[in-house]
Length: 141
Image 1 (cartoon, rainbow, N blue to C red):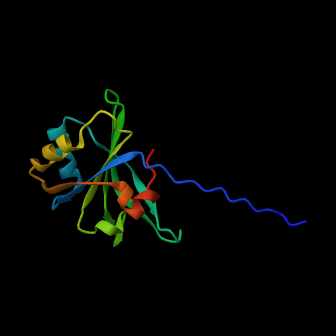
Image 2: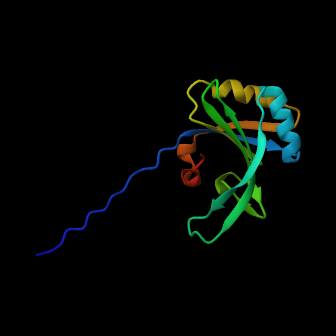
Image 3: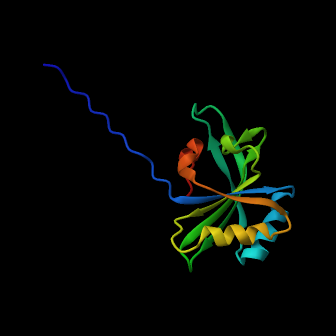
């Protein structure tokens, strides 16, 4: 009798919105300006540990977090490049990524417009994380 082999596979659900930021300033100065403009309080947390698909390369990216209890979402600002490795290698021109996790109440267009008025930000761009293959590897909790 031949044994049947079953393979369980599922698609990982992406539960965040993604905004790319270009800035020539250090992360702490950028965060101060974002906090002032958006009225939030991003604070530095342990660095985000990024693993490549092979699992051999690991990098620690500078990370800031703000939990918005009123709107029930979490903001993460993560630096894209650390020691020559990119968090999202498809977007090497982007310096930082702002993640809005479990967002159901904030309009991204409004935040992007507010971010464009921050003096430290040269450009703010909304991305669809479903279209970026390496974004599927990012887990934020």
